[in-house]
Image (cartoon, rainbow, N blue to C red; front, side, top):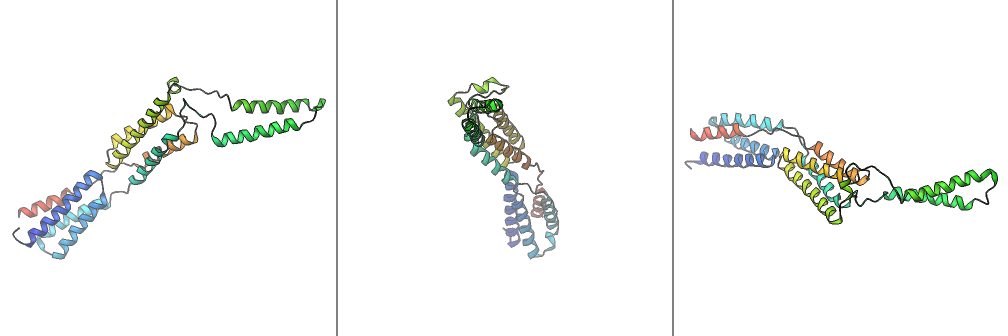
Length: 249
């Protein structure tokens, strides 16, 4: 270093270089903006004419950083974390619980009421035979509904998963979502979209989409996808270029 000015320019260059690397790797606009503003404040304190071109370049880069819209990548990552934590509790089609707990309780209460009504009816008179048989039939239908359930499944493979295969399926879904989370934070949009779509496809194919838990997870994934808005990040090339030009003088 020839003098104090060279020392100060070297410090500013190191500050801007580190901030530029953070901007490229993590997309952290606030760190880059703080570095630019700090460098401009240092040059303003010296108040030397040879720094005017560099300060103009810094001002233009600062304006570009401030114009970048805010993106809630952290919120999208949190939604992915919540979805990952719920994968183990999602019902598979191959081991489907026929009824959700609240639905089962409602049906159970209704069947108990029907059974009680059937028992409380005295020896049926001629006029009440139809109503009595109706209550008995409703009671039997509610009981059978808890045992037998008919539904259409487009892919029979989803019904043939064994216990071990179900465990591996859950782990694969979680791995896809973890990869999507890492791609989201590193701003790798193609990988993020691909892994998220693959996880959604597996959930839709092998899990019971009528379950409220599955619907909740799918909603979280859609919200994460909507929150990961693509933003073209500016660079600090103009400031770094002006800094290199100043060092050559």
